[in-house]
Image (cartoon, rainbow, N blue to C red; front, side):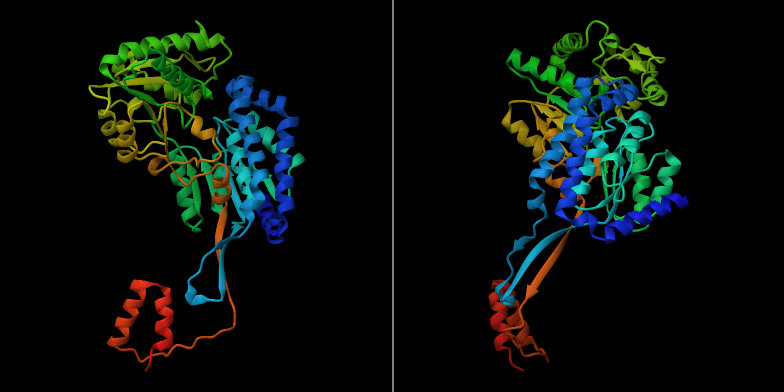
Length: 480
């Protein structure tokens, strides 16, 4: 506890010194992040293999590549992001000028996640560095190899007087949350997020919460067989390709019209076999379940006899290997846990409706998801989805790609999260926009002051009904 307080004290001292505010410091740290992931690529591959069984291709796509892209984007734009933004001011205040100046919050706390333990720690860090903050990263203890990597390697590349990694489990997280932070960025479950918010509220600390939820995929009737195959192929990649379903933006369930269910299942099976072979466990291309606790949680979702009866593909489990086969379920009970909890694993329920437009009501009957994926060419249906549903994002005719676009914000709404990041939005998340207004001493206009009366009130109303110039004229002409 004393050691933690000393570390935080040094971070605050470093921030107060102004060290982290300069453009040079920020760029140097971003270049250091790029050098780190370049030099330690093989070490990162090994750590992700140990924690999650990720193949190097998946690790580069979802972890290293994400960090590299984000750091390069920030380096290219940071000078522009830091610059004050001029804003127009009313003629009433002439001569004057107004601007908005981004400034760092101070010392910020970033909680990483276990499913993407490298990218979800370093990507927010890039935003915090770009904004000029001092930073503490708390990696997830459930990915010990990656957490150890971050703790041991980051100080060798980054400014350890301003950026620190603190390891530990729930007790250490609780100790961190007892302290006052200038910003907290959390990625994880809604249950833990509520604890983070409670702790932050004691100090009125702003928070960004990147959570999850049950992200649906809507599969409309696509007239072209080739379009249907592309859609289902992307569903397979969006469900099992990202950490074997252990992704907050992964597809949680599919909504499809009843008459297309057999076609959907047939094509799903075809692409599962094509991507992962006859025995996906031996393919080496699919991640394993993170640990025994999560394995048992997923296993329990299938224990309900009515849920087990709905399995139409897969369902095999190997607890010793922490392996669960890609599994498809058709119309499991809607009151079962599998349809009321975020699955966060390789189980894919298919829910049938009589008319695909009913999917909007189905989605709206549940908490707001982090993402909605809709495969359709119907422009009217697209407009309905956008107008009548609420979610962190909507992606038409693909999955997950919105996460990789730095020009678009990533974040949730309602139970799926608070706040957003990526690209400029990461910089904004870790910045306070300070209003700056400058006026001259000349000319000095001296309005006539009270006592007021109803007649003057009428003039004031008229002035606001027109423009600020009217207020100026009013101030010059008011008489006692």
